[in-house]
Image (cartoon, rainbow, N blue to C red; front, side):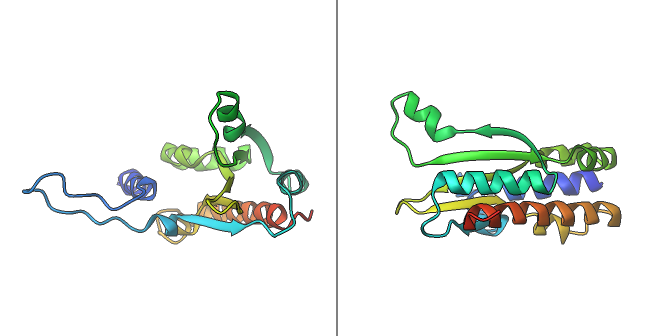
Length: 169
């Protein structure tokens, strides 16, 4: 039953907008505002993309948050001739924590690895964004030992975001 509840939570978190009425005899479905599912942090004026990347990578290494992958999405799209705002996605993981989470319930693999996106908005401002784990932490779906892990991971990811946003490490 917990798996079904967790899957339902994941489903709700992944939806990005209110569902529209599909047919006249179908009810309208309202979904939680997507902005509540994401932590957004602006990159401080004067901090370059390179400075932000260096700072967040350095902070992750300092706190032993394993760097898993980087997807330089805008770079790839530009190589294909498509002009696009800056988008870079960084993935991190603590393998021991991941193991504990999936040993409890494999559904938590959907949250892995932890990601921080650096994205440029329409005005050219840089933002760092990650999944808001508070929704999972406060959901009462996790037993106490997994709640402790989620809180620790959430704090580590926020620390990495602050380093990137300020350019300080």
